Image 1: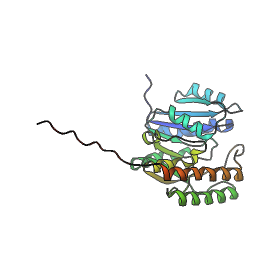
Image 2 (image 1 turned 180 degrees about the horizontal axis):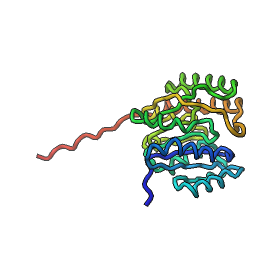
Image 3 (image 1 turned 90 degrees about the vertical axis):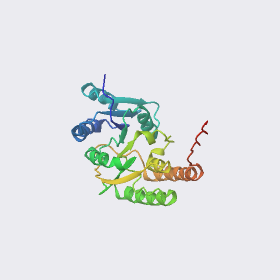
Image 4 (image 1 turned 30 degrees about the vertical axis):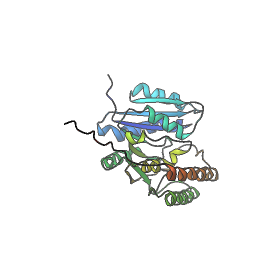
Length: 244
């Protein structure tokens, strides 16, 4: 019987075939020294290239790999949630498939987890175009001010989280951008830690700055409504009277 994993690494991807083999190799280099049982869940969001076939080939040589397929194309939030629901580990890690997140940062994030429920990467020396960096900085400041979540880099996908609080979160379309905020609003302990950021190795981003900001602003209004309208409370049951 296969040993139950302690760690589940969830990697959503769409049309990222050129990056997947290198990503798998880097995950092995980063995580194998931990000597903990793990699984790698690659979630295909209706790719139009040979990425899924490539992952199947990798799985033939590494039984820790699982391939999930989301159809039709549903977006990153749906792909992540599919991975979360399928994950068997006590701890769940996420990162992008395009190579900009460095898997070598995962051990340090995992080492910080005993003091938190979620450890989020904060990208230093970002390797994005200046326009993307400026837009991200503005969006992060506005979001943090409105939600009061104290999360400085909501766009970094490199994170490690305990599975138990994550199971209470239902991601809406685009909700992956607010995942640390949602966890924090549910009472989870969220920490941040600097991580590396690398240039995109292959292809181009599928997001345009204007279109992304327009969607984020709408989603932010929804998050603001949710944060102010959801009641949070504790319930304690009184002990039953003793029969003398």
